Image 1 (cartoon, rainbow, N blue to C red):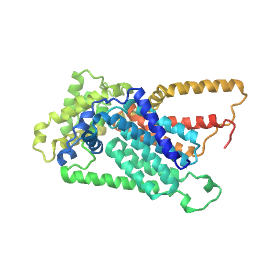
Image 2: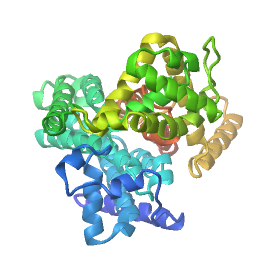
Image 3: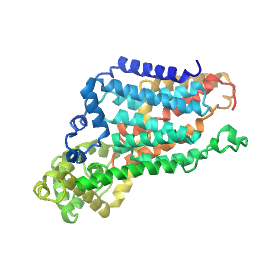
Image 4: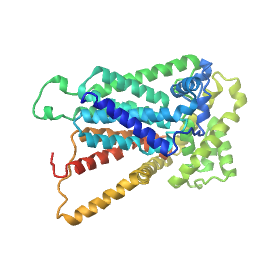
Length: 457
């Protein structure tokens, strides 16, 4: 029976995930603005595929699903993937000695977290990429503990797949190196008491090896795109995300005064922003409120900068040496560099404000979650009752394996959100995926103290 425990737990996670999704109406397909670019990915042409703004992993999966069981099954498949990811995390925590109750509490919080609640039913990469990110983190915990080559290979494969599903997870490359190094300093109980068996010790270079292997695969993909479509990059996408922030950190006149082709684009962008009534910095600069930048970002991104960079220079790009998609992407990149060279201070202010916004925004999203909110309120009520009945609350029990989980959870959100705010606002769909482990980190401690209130480790 003990050997079947893992399988039984996986079945229970799947049943819980499917039941919650069914009750909440999340097994019905929902589409978003990004859906068509995944569903209609040009798989029949290598050149067109490499010029697409999307990486191929998720579109290929959708094409297989559409050709076999139909896209109506996408939400259920998302649920199954996320339930499996939560189960793998639970098993990783149990493998590190965490009690079953605490490990289950942590994994269930991941299963029902904000990303699952908001995106599990949509045909987009938000939910599957978050699930694959959880799998990558769990496999890193396993590989650093066991020094198992298959676990390490699986971790690298999961990281590559995550990035090819959603390039916003490029942060996994430096994160694997840093988190792997930090985990190598975490000692299990047998190491603390003096066991010197090398098989029980983590390799300090494991994280760097994993990061390097993932980077090699990505550079290989970029070289392949360079060979075929003359563009050394993961996809011709992303520069316009940053430009939609940068144009809100400088005055319209600054945009008009940019040199060269960037000045041509800057004048067109400034005129369009003013004619459409966007809130912009004054002649002396100054920072717009963070929420204003965030609210205007999407409209400026897809409704101003990208269309103008494409349409204003269409005739020039038609006879250029590279494909129009690549030319547009490079033009916006040059535009960004020109703005930064003229006014780097506005971008620095944005980064500082975005950090603050991501912290309180993520905390608010977690606190207002339909499941986490009553749990928080019940926990506070229990703490109040306990505080009135006892002179002291006693020591807090931290379950075994929690330190390693804390390393993963905290470093994951720092690298994830830190990477996002470099080019995009910390929207809920971005920041929530980064903070996916934090509710479980807290819940695992609460479960340990509920289970063994008088125990001290």
